[in-house]
Length: 153
Ligand code: RB5
Image 1 (cartoon, rainbow, N blue to C red):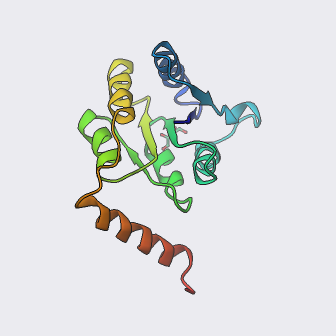
Image 2: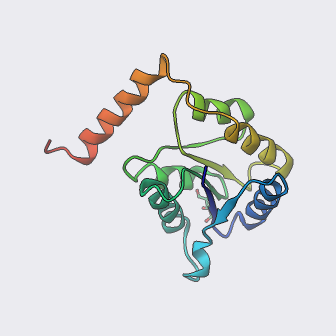
């Protein structure tokens, strides 16, 4: 599984904590570091860049962090085929994969402490879509998304 991560200026510390944590567990993670290519980059373009990497299949999962996690989730969900949710608790992080089949998790450095953030990421990485009763719900979301992105069809 290929995982990428990125953040805006409000979440640089949390990004480092999570990268170090995952690397210490032997998990390969790529820091997209969009800000290094564009000084003063704002969260929408940073989050959009990460979501595009997921959309094109370059990465399977993404961790997108900012001050609150809200802006990163909003922008990721504007990229067709990419689904993201803000998670500041373990249960939601598991459900994000198991029920919602979302590829992107977002969090806010101004909301959550580093230890809980690490636990949440572990839970999220350890969870997969369970199908079953969630399948028609996720499919309906994809259908409605198609209608929204391609209203002419
Ligand atoms: C800071 O730019 C802050 O607005 C951002 O990190 C994020 O919290 C937005 O949702």
